[in-house]
Structures are given as structure tokens and as C-alpha cells.
Amino acid sequence: MSQLLLNTKKIYNWKYSLLFLPLLVTFLFYLFTSLFSASGFGSINYPLHMLVMINIYIILGFSINLVTGYTGLLSLGHGAFYGISAYIMVLGLMVLKVPFFLALILAIVFNMAISLLVSLPSIRLKHDYFILAVIAFQMVIFTILYNWTSVTRGPYGIPGIPRPDIFGLWHVDETWEYVVLSYILLIIVFVYFAKVDSSSFGRVIKGIRDDELVVSSMGRNVNLMKAYVFAVSAGIAAFAGALFATSATYIDPTSFGLDESIFIIMIIFIGGSGNLKGVFWGALFVELLPEILRFLQMPDAVAANLRQIIFGLIIIILMRFKPTGFAGDYDYD
Amino acid sequence: MLIQLLVNGLIAGSVYALVALGFSLIYRSTKIFHIAHACVYTSAAYFLYLFHIQFHVGLVVSIVLSLICTGILGILMEITVYHPLFKEEASSSVMLISSIGIMTIVVNTIAMLWGNETKIIVSGISEVKKFNNPFAGAESPFQEIILTVPQLYQFGISILTILLVLVVLKYSKFGKKVNAICDNDRLVEIFGISLTRYRIMIFFIGSLMAGLGSVLFAVDVGMDPYVGMPILLIAAVAVIVGGVGYFFGAVLGGFLMGFAKALVVWKMSAKWENMIVFILLILFLLLRPEGILSRKKRKA
Image: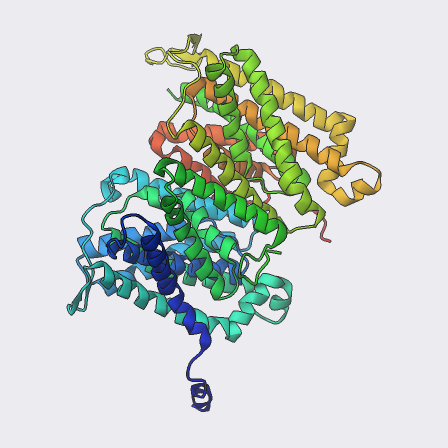
């Protein structure tokens, strides 16, 4: 109780203002592109949709930040968790016909269970082996989603995913309502991270990242901690999967392949990991770069590849001169 | 049927073994988990396309030219990206992340220049050779093993190259130095061997082997910009399953992957054939993480 009273002295913590960053940057971007384009002010729906995608990638960035930035395990398999949760949402909403939040909880629990399946055998392995095992997991999940056509409809994808209905009170349908929903989920994730960042648990997992031996000599079960972190991270990825499935209303396995995993991990390579702010900058950058290329009248066929080439170049240059990324704490050493 | 599939597995396995040996060479000596090996593999096929289809050079000459270009590409990666990091004693994670960056750049450049669709080097149906099947029963419908000519080339060239490389690594002076670099590269430097030069040579040879495997497959089935990643993963799994401590382990693992895929095609369906590779990896990591061939290590 006294702890609580002490904390209330600090009424507003400045790190929470990071949450306004996506909103602000999207608004500025909209203003800027409208002022400098011939067609003038376009529909607000497109920037709002962009904002939803940015929030989804911030959530994914946090999910992978916990594993890679805080605990030091490179994971090239978060596209799989993202995909599994999207498909479980479909199962919950369309087959079992449960409410949105129940389906979300189902997806979280399922993701955590699946994550144990991959982390428990591979977590005690050497660094490179762990990475390969997670890539292998990613490929297995992709193959299942793609080829198990009787359940997932494979490459045809699943259309007509219903819009979420929150407790029968709020039918989320318009794009701005999605912005609100994505913000609610983002705030849940962010508050959890703000707690982890300044808690003893956060310091322990950062200790695992920096020197595993020291942490285990302090009497912590390192492998158990790693498996736990991996499970929580998979659970957070489920938030993003749920948002994506219901906002796009159509999913197919190609959105959840190894490319997607690499794209997700690029968020923290570019933005930086091991703290709260890096993810925001990374997600904003990877989501806004294609919009900037489109603004510069780049043809779409070239822009998709050019964007990836720019990411690759940035990563190589950053790793050479500033491995922490633009705003990170962890230098992958 | 089974014999036919096993022979196919053996042939595919020989190419996997070739790529895996190249990967193992780089991984063991430089300790880089060289994911960009995937794009080295892909670019070899596209160099071949460039020379043979677009510049109308003869097939054999363009294969040689594309292999040289692939080797140079590998050297470029080492000089521009890995070596500065190596000099700064960057961690293996940083190397791996840079490698992902290289792969993204090269694959997307290829996709930008040549498009995403599948390209074919040799059109038409390839010539077929038939062999008697000694294991078929009298009433079996599969009395003959049918192989295409490109498959025979794949097998022959891969096996010869693998043998050559293994012999060179085992018996020549160069091979002994490479083995020494695998064990302890800093110590090798003390003995006056230029690590810079040897790393360049290692990258050249490793990339050459990936390129050779790629070219052999490309002549048979064509290519697209994303063909490298599955092969790289098979190669990496082969290296780990075979045993990281030995060059021969990669070869063994490569053949095992070929057979495993053939068995899956026989028992289940071709669409699950990539999955068995990763299930094998997980099984090995669980039960025998040191690989088939293992060296008893004294604890430090």
C-alpha cells in the first residue's frame, strides 16, 4: 500500500507520451502530403488505415523487442505467431462464434502454448542453433497454413472475417473505430512494457541478455525465464494478429511467411531495441517509407522491392556504425 | 516406385550436399551464419540466365562465367560487409543481422531487375535415360528407373566436386590451413598466415559451390528470386544434423535431407516435403544436438 502511495506522487510519467507519437506523425504526414500534392486534401480514411497498420506493427515490434531486445534471443519466427493468432481469431469468430475478446484470449493462450512447443526444445541450444530452430518453426507453420487446405483454405485465403463486436455494446466498423481499438490494445501492451522496463523482472531478463552466467549464478533458472519470455512475446503477437485479421477481413498464408518475420525483426533492427522508444521509431519508419516512395511517384512494382533494398542497406550500415539502431539500447553483442 | 524416389532423393541430396559443404566451409571457418548464402545461390542462376538467354553465350561458357561472377559476389560480401565487422570483433548476432541485410538487398535487386516470375534456362522436355531396376518384383509396374540427363549431370558433377573439395580440405596445404582457421583463427594469424586472404579464398570457394548447385538445378527446373532460401535452410539443417565439427558431416546431412524428402513424397505428398527437413532438425536438436558425427569435446 505504501508503495502505491509513493507511486501516485508521480502523476504523469513522460514515457507514456510516446503513445501519441504514431498519431502525431500520421497527422503530420497527412498534412504534408496533402499540402504538396495536386489533389489537395484527400480522404482521412487512408491515413487512419495507415495508423492502424502502424499500431499493429508497434505491437509486433514490442512482441519481438521482449525476446530480442530485452532477452537477447534473435527470433526470426514472429511472423508465424502473428499468423497463427490471425487464423485462431478466424476460428473463434467464424466457427465457434465467440465474442471478440474471448477469441483474442483463445488466440493468446494458443500462441503461448505453441511457443512452448518451439522454445522448450531449442532454448538451451547455442545461439545459431536457436535461430535456425525458430526459422524452422516458422517454415513449418507456413507450410501448414499453406497446404492444410481443408482447414485454412490454403492460398485462397479466408475472406469475410466479421468485424469485432465488443461486449455487444460497440460494433467496431469504421476505420476511426479501428484506430480506437488498436490504441486500446496498444495501450495494454505499452503499460505492460512500461512496467517490465522498470521492474526487477526487466532487469533480470536484461541480465540474461548481457551475461547469462551471472544471472544463473544468482540462482535464477535462465532457461525457464527464456521460455516464459518467449511465451509472453507470442501472446503479445496475438494482439496484432487479432487486429490484422479483423481489420483486413481477409487473410492468406503469404502474409505470414519468413519475409514477414524478417520484416518484423527489421523494426527493431532499424528503430532499436531494449527500450520503449525504439519500437515506435522503427515501426513508423518501416510503415511510412513505402508511403513516402508512393508520394515520390515511384511505380508500385519498383517501390515494393526498392523499399526492401533500402531496409537492407540501412541495416548493414547501422550494424557497421551504430548497432543499437536509431534509438535503441542493445547492440547485439 | 520407392527405388525411383530414392534415386531421385540421392540425386537431389548430392546437390544439397554440395551447397551444404559450401555453407559449412564458411560457417566453420569464419563463424558467420551466412544467411546471404541463399542469395549467392539465387544470383548464380540469374547470372546464368543473363549470359545464356540474354547475351546468347553458349551454355558451358555461360555456366563458367556465372560461377566466376558468383564467386566474386561472395568475395564482395566478405570485403564490404563481413571483414570490417570482423576487424571490429563484432558479435555473431551482428554478423547474422548484416547477412540478413545483404540477402534482402540482393534478392530484391534480382526481383526488381528480372521480375518475380519463374525463368527457364533450357526449354522443352529434357532427354531421358532408362535403367533397369534390379529390386523390382516380376509384376511390379516400375521395371525401369527413369532419369533425365540434367539429373545425371547434377549427380556426377556434384559428387566429383564434393570429393575434390573434401580431398583438398583433408590433404593439401591449403586445406590444412583452412582446418586450422576453423579451430582457432587468431592463433593462425600469429603463425603468419594472412587471415584476410584466406577468408577471401574461403568465401570464393564456398560461393562457387553454392553457385554450382544453383546452376545445376536451374538448368533442370528454372528459378525464381526466392529459390535460395529453402535450399539454404536445407543446407544449414544438413550441416547441423550431420555434425558441425566435420566437413563430411555436411555431405552426410545433405544426402539425408534428399532421402528424407523422397520418403515424404512416397508416404505422404510432395507438398509436405519441406516440412520433414525442419521436423528432422527439431528431432536432432532434441535427441542429438551434436549431429550424426560428433567429436567428444574436452570441457574447457
